[in-house]
Image 1 (cartoon, rainbow, N blue to C red):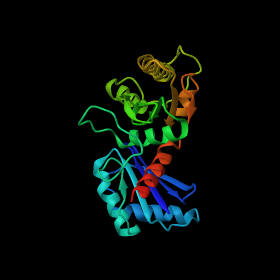
Image 2 (spheres, rainbow, N blue to C red):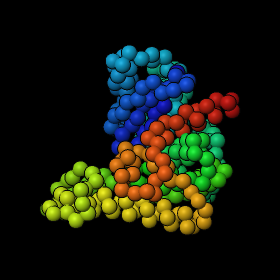
Image 3 (cartoon, rainbow, N blue to C red):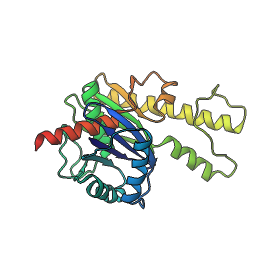
Image 4 (cartoon, helix red, strand yellow):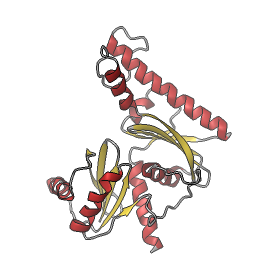
Length: 257
């Protein structure tokens, strides 16, 4: 059984894959000081609560927080008796090319989304990921990752606005009933929601114009369904894109052995 782990700046997702499908998925906050023992106890309790098998013998990891990887490696070695496959490391091969400036380090999550996007939707894609940062990743016609755009994440922007302006409260991100707000919270919600809709549409249109070809926009991440309500720019939402990519990369590397 495969344990797929996606470490983001805010949350870490663990998912069990039985060879044909995912049978369980759980998340915790990303915390570099969490030990291998703590991971295992937490995960085992959740698996047993859901009455699922836990015969993990393979692990694949994508992480944008390098400090977390050591304890996840230790988790794999100590409790699952295996060496994890870590996306972005030299021993992890990718089924797609990466065509960026020499010496550039591309985030593991962006590579994983590229692999999954090309597998499910073909080439000429813009993969829009709503995470701690809002990223736009461009996938060429042959599946190669060729670059993208990084913008501040939605929740990060809300937090910065609240912390920098004493009179502005912290707000939930939601679609407002109307554009023109009649109180502070409604004004802020409108600015965040419609501001990011404008960012999504503007950047996607600029990428399409620069590439001079039709391109599909695939959105993933927790806020993708919310912002899809405000724009026709998004063609498809796939909240399982990253986990699917991890399985594909793991399978590709197994075949290389």
